[in-house]
Image (cartoon, rainbow, N blue to C red; front, top):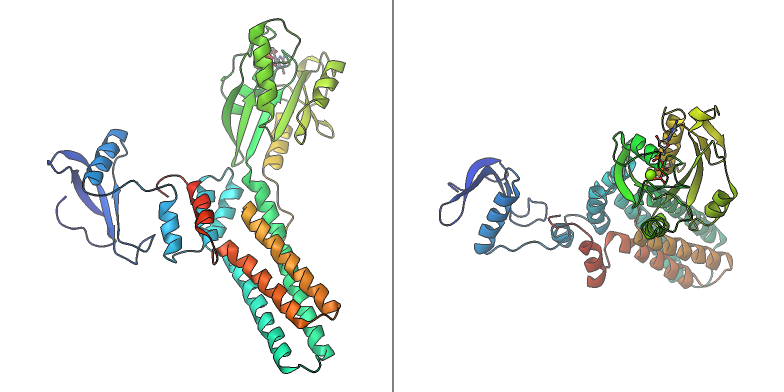
Length: 411
Ligand SMILES: Nc1nc2c(ncn2[C@@H]2O[C@H](COP(=O)(O)OP(=O)(O)OP(=O)(O)O)[C@@H](O)[C@H]2O)c(=O)[nH]1
Ligand SMILES: [Mg+2]
């Protein structure tokens, strides 16, 4: 490979195996501990990306004593070496898997430590109060003055308010994480596949005037206003004796389980029929479902929103499509009504914040009830510990294993 590259400088090198065979030519960057991502000695090879050359390079490195990293191992090492806290390490995986621009920027905020800072600030507030409460216990054994209690209560209320605000930001972020799967269903020939193709801007699905054209479901990725929507086209619903069509309809039912949003499409010429009402009512529970009156170029109905969760469109002429797209975008990318930055929280973070809130409420109740200050201090400690879990100040190997195993290899 030639001379040893200068630290933290990109050096152009030929990559060769021990036999001298040229593998690739590319950039090598050498990092010396602690000035690397993981805080350890590290070397980076940047080649041309040919899978064959990458495999050859990996094989050569393994022959020289390296091994493949486990999923998330780089982030885990960075965390264990104190380069970042646990919430920041998790944000790396969240950034990689972000399904929308809003989710990506929320993940980035967490990665740069904004979320951790808010948690740390709260922790510091709790600690100060805890110390003061303990001091009151030590020095005022005989009686605790009313002004002391009032001061504690006021500060407890402020801290409680901060936890509640952080929880709200976390919940908004949690909604952002889920991405958006939108499925098209409805009777045969309504125009589902035509609409699917319109969304994607290319004729992915077969469209014909023959009812029962779509036999199996199709899924494609559609990027709408920076939001990644997984759209699914399905076999039209009708009574059928054809075993292939029956299987297709059965598959429609099962794929709808995965959807967050269901668009039930009908042919406006036929209108909303009893069979539609029955099928609509039978959609999987807990889904958001909208009625789409399609083919309005043939009925003359006005395009756009007809009523709550009902849209009139023509998949053929695209009338009413902008309104529908806007509604889908707003569904998938809820604008936060929460003050401050959205936090791309994980369930684990929400659970910890919930426990922190609960502990503060118990502390407040103990203060109000004039109970022993030891109880207040104990709840403050519990609240602080819960926050520590978010940052990974107290984490078990099992928890770390579970978190980093979901990362992709190489991160
Ligand atoms: N004029 C008009 N024709 C449409 C419209 N949408 C679909 N069509 C036509 O209706 C027919 C059926 O459309 P498809 O998209 O295949 O319908 P589908 O709901 O996917 O049908 P299945 O796959 O059989 O369930 C085709 O001939 C389309 O060209 C529309 O908005 N206006
Ligand atoms: Mg179809």
